[in-house]
Length: 430
Ligand SMILES: Cc1ncc(COP(=O)(O)O)c(C=O)c1O
Image 1 (cartoon, rainbow, N blue to C red):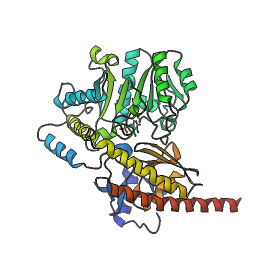
Image 2 (tube, rainbow, N blue to C red):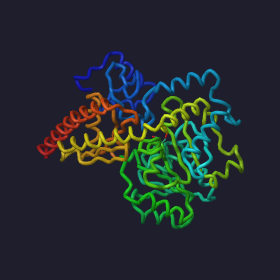
Image 3 (spheres, rainbow, N blue to C red):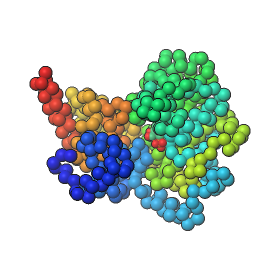
Image 4 (cartoon, rainbow, N blue to C red):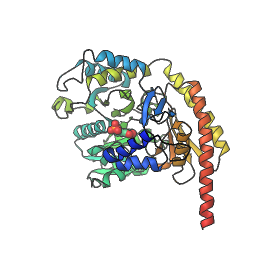
C-alpha cells in the first residue's frame, strides 16, 4: 500500500485473516490495486474504513445503496416489521409478498402482472429465463457478448466466458451471444424462430455502460416480436430511478415481456429480487405453482423494505432531484474532461448511470486507486477496465455532489500524471 496510507496492525491482521478464511485471491487483488478497503460504519452515501477513513460511496454496490446506506425509513420499517414478521413460509400466500406484487403490477403498468421472487439478482434471472422457456416452449437464449447477469446456472451461461470457464460451465448448449448495438447480429440470432428470449441489460453495467444507439432497443424489441422471442429486461442496475425513470427501459420507450429488478429494491437492508412478467407469459404459475421454489425468495421482511423503497422512489421530488444530480455531474465532469483531453476521453450517461472513459489500458484502475486515496469509492468496469463506473445515488445532496467533483478533479489529475509517467518509462525502456 502507498506509504501515505499506513494500515493499523488490526487492519493488517484482519486482511490476513480474510485471505486465510474468506477469499484469498479477491482479498489480494484489492491490495494489488491499491484499495485496502474494509468497510466498517456506513451512513447515507458515506462509508468509513475500519481505520476510520471517510469515503463517499459512488459504487453503491451496483445500485444496491441507491437511496443510501441504512436509510432511516428502511430501518424503521424493518424494526417495525420484526415485531410481527420474519421471512415467512414461502409455500403460502402472505401479506408482504402479495402486497409488493400488487404494487409492482401498478408501477410497471400494462399487463406486467405477476411477480416471482428470489433472494438475489442471479436467481431472479434464472426464474425469468425459465419463465420464458415455459411460455415459448423454446430453449435457446440470446444475450449480449460480455453480458453480466450474475452467477447462478442460467444467469452465468448468459454472461461472459471469464466466469464460466473456471467452473467448466463454458459450453452450455442453447446460449447464443451477440454484440451490443448490432441489429444484424441480433436478427441473425433470432430469425430461426427457435429462441425463447433475448435477455439484456438496458445499459450493460459491467461492460462499462455503453449506451444503446438511438432506436436500437426499440428495434430489438420489434425483432423479438417478429420472431416470437420474449424480451427480458435486466433492470438490476438500471432500474429504480437510476436512469431518471422508475425503469431504465422507459427512457427508451420500450415495454419488455419480463423484467428483473434486484440490488436496490432491497434497500441494501434485506435481500430480495423480483421478476415481473406480462400476464400471458407467466403461464407456469397457473400450470404448477410449485415449479420454482425458493425458501428465502420474497422473504416477507424483504417485501416490506422493498415496498418502502418503491414508495420513496415514487415521491414527486424524486425525478427533479435525479435530473439535478445528473446535470450537476454532466457539467462538472465535462469541465474536468477538458483539463485532461488526452486521458479522460468520454462520459457515458443516462441519468445517474454513468461510465467515465479513460484512454489508457485499464485506465479506470489508476483512477479508482487515486479516487480511493482521495476519499471516493468508485469501481472500474470488470469487463472493460478502461471505464470507471460512476454511480451517484438518487438522494445525493448538492454539497456532496460538489465535494465529489472536487475530489474527482484531483484524482483524475494524479492518475493522468501516473499513466503519463508509466508511458515515459515504457518509451525509455524501448
Ligand atoms: C445487471 C445485473 N444483473 C444481475 C446481477 C446479479 O445479481 P446478484 O449479485 O444479486 O445475484 C447483477 C449483479 O451485479 C447485475 O449487475
